[in-house]
Every structure is written in C-alpha cells, then in structure tokens.
Length: 480
Image (cartoon, rainbow, N blue to C red; front, side, top):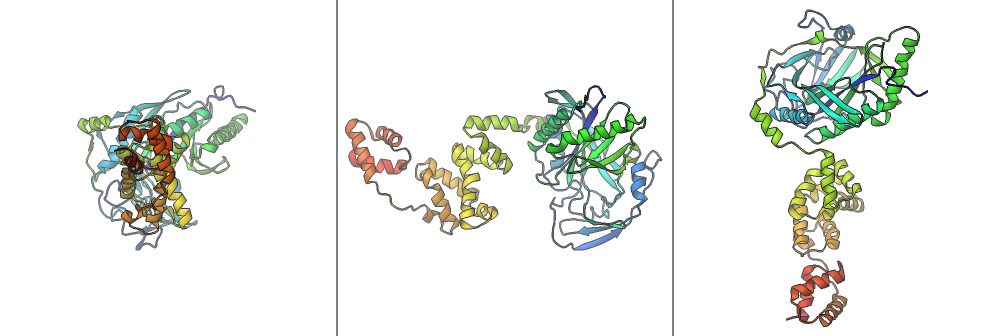
C-alpha cells in the first residue's frame, strides 16, 4: 500500500560528508591512499571519558565498552600528527577556501570567527580519540521542485583512519585517510517525501562536484535522519546510492510504523543501509556530550576580504556548464562523457586555444580509447604519450590548415607507436589528380576570381578531401 507521507508526519534531513581534493587539513601530508605494505604499525587502546559538560556520550560509552585493541599502519606519506604525537599545524587554507565556496553556493552565512572543536570518537578511527571539526557556516538553503530545503550547518573536519581488517578483539587502520579534509553538510528536517530526499541529495552533489572535491568510491558518505509522527529519529548510514534511496526510506518508515501499530516506540539509533535497501543496527545515536574545544589551535578568523574574493570567483554549477557546452555545439552524450571522465578542465583549456569543440572532445575522449584498444595499451599509457603538449600542437596545426581533421588519428597512432612528432606529421603524399580536375572545373565555371575566393569554393566543394594548404597548392597551378 502506498504511504501517505504527509499524513504520517514524515520528516527527514540529510547529512553529507565529502572529501576535498587538497593535502591534509592540519599537516602538509598528501591525501593519498596506499595499497602497499606499511613502514610501521603502532598499537593503541582508547578509553572513553566525559566531555565538556561532564557527561559521557552514550555512543562513545557503547563503543568504548567493546575494549578493542587498535593497530595503526603508517607510511612515508603520513606523519606524527596522524599518530597524535605532534600538535596540529594551522588549518589548510585551500581546504577552507573550497568549504567556503560550497557554503556560499548554498546561500549560507559564514562565521567570521569560529572555534575549532574536538568531537569524541572512540571506535579507534581517530588515534587521538576525537575528531577536529569547525562550524564555518549556517542558515542557507537549496531549491527543489517541492520547495526550499534549509541548510542547517556546514562543518570543515578531518576524515577518519581507514579500517583494513577487523574482528571482535581488534581493528587495523591505515593512517593514509586520517586527516583528509572533509566537509559536513547538514540540512534542516525540511524533506517531506522520498522523492524530495533524492532530489536534494542530487542537487547537493551537483554543487559539491562544481568545486575542488575528490572523486571516486569512498570520497563521499551520505546519512539520512528520518522519523514520522510519534516515533524516534533514526540515523541511516551508507545512504549513497540514488537507485535505492526511496526504497530504503519506504522500508524504514514501515519499520517505524510497525512499532507504533503495537503502541511502542522505536529506539533512537544509528542504522546501516544495506544494498537491498534494508537497514541493520550499528550503535546508539550520539548526543551533544561528545563535543569540547580544541586547545592546540587558535580561534579561526575568516576575513571579509577572503570571503569577498571567493564570491567574485565562484565556480559554475554543472547545469550552467552544460548549457554553455551545448551552445558550443557538443552533443548531450559527449557532455556526459566529459563529466564522467572528469575532463572538463582539459576541455576548457583546449577550447580556449582552438575553439573546435567536436575535435577537442574526440581528442580527449574518443581517439585515445580507440588507439589504446588497437595498440593493446592502457588508457593511462596512452594519455602519458598523448599529453597536453601533443594535443595543443595537433589543434594548432589543424587551425593553421597544416593538418586535416581526418588525418589526426593517423598522426596520433604514429606518435603512440614511437615516431617523433615532426616525423609523424609527414603524411603520405596524396594523389591530387582528382582534386586538380575539380579545381580546374571550378576555375573554368567562375573565371576571374582571386585565389582566396577560389579557396572558399574548393573547400566547400571537396568537403574534407584536402587541407587548405593542399587546396591552395592546386589553385595556384591554375590561377596566377
């Protein structure tokens, strides 16, 4: 039976965590995930303690009572800060700039002065037992087809360590992910239907992807807070897949209704979304007792000049960029491919050079794949050979009419096979006999024109059979 979400008092809010594409938040270590053997492994135990209010957070107590041992794998791309053996450095300004771009794009108000806080985390994913987090903006909104959705808060925080092995007694973590800048976006509980939840999630995703965020599996984590009238709020983790969002909500609401039908209330808890849309219990829902001020860092001052500069240079959203690309003459299929392959910045740079969108998209997205398949090479190997300098040179030669578009693939294939660029440009001499006949006929039909005028007629008539340079060579045989 279809659920009447308005009648049952459905309320939901999203919480999205997105990694930013910079070095780490409180040190200069690169944000690189490793798969090789660690240099060192450190053993630790973590104990739960009272927060600033004097209370022990219920979620921290629950996890702390498991009494597990934690092992931390270190690399040459991690440092003592990740091991909590050195104080944090000043906050990463590039990460702060990206976080502020996102906040402004979501119509938020920015705090001019902010206190960096410690959030108690005792599942071992932070060596210190806490996560550093700072509230930088509040009170924004996004638009959906079902109305505005308020943005309650935007935090900039450090990501946790990465679990690689676990059992009931221990967990092994890698320190490569710990400290990667993470933006946390929380909406108000304004979402009134599953369709609006999905639309809002996709809208926020579009805004995030317009800025300098990391891409790929594991770089974004999305949670949903949901309840109906008379029930307790439930937080659902792992709510990333758009294909099962609405199904997951339907199943959770039916689960909560099941308690109410028996005159009971569901427990306030955190649950994990499974691949089939069902959920499972993870832990009690955390409270406010786990936050207290960070004492190793000064107050964060966000100056008006810095905010004004960001406002002047805000990135465009995907929808706006797509409209521009369509006006330039690209198909919807090619536009989708540009975004999927993350080639927008390369496309923009090459477009500024040549203004030939169709050839540029072929150079970036089509020809390298065809050549890789033919030469039995990986895409990475092909892109290393056909680098930016090669692409710019090719476009320049086409623009100057020294290379015809239909010969581009042949030239690229020769370069990939090991031929030097200048040598690859020496194409086989064409038989221009048929071309000469056509040019002679055009000159005979329209006598007395200049060479340039004949050039326009010839190029229109032959439609890609020759380059401009080749056409002019033939024309000058008949026009002095």
